[in-house]
Length: 279
Image 1 (cartoon, helix red, strand yellow):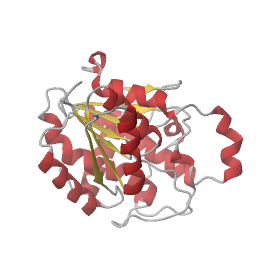
Image 2 (cartoon, rainbow, N blue to C red):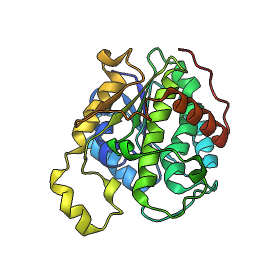
Image 3 (tube, rainbow, N blue to C red):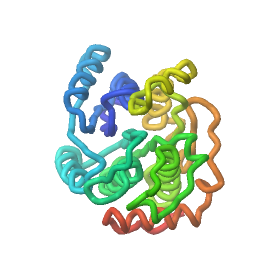
């Protein structure tokens, strides 16, 4: 899809980099936004080596900073008033209790609230596209998740997996809520058990115990690029797909009342007005 502008958060490694390779190979302009600029420059070199002539751009973005997100979007939209595809890929499994600079528990703050603010700020540019699409990286971990609004600021005691599962459920709730509020398509995927840097904070012995079952990031990257560019997904919205089965959305994720409550609460927290339901 020559000329399409694609923004990928965390596109410097793992699933994000695999998706960046796919989009570049299909002729899109690929914009990577992430914290680690050194790793991102190497990623761009890798993409150019595989796809000579690829149109690539690099931006600095910290999803744990609302001010940083606003600065980034101002810079990005000045260069790209029309955005065709947003891939909310960046995320982390955070083993230690920490806070974002805005005072939110880091897992929900960086994995969920930051991407929500970014998406809401970019929506006007996506809506200018003749085929605007958003892909959210969720996870089957959402099946174990529940939403505790009181934990967004402070989660004690802190256990990494429940916090991560909540953040992934949040990604799916937001994707579903957004699909009813914009003409831009909004879909979420479970990438599968992917061998990606998501697990970099896990103890090495634990990682080694299940590494054999992991699949390559390329499988998820292809599905992300299909959702972003393929004609077959042009009218698909509000769905949850999987690069590696199963792709089952939990009852909580399908709860429309919870979707709306979550959406409106998060918009209030990040400082943007909630959009009304269109459908």
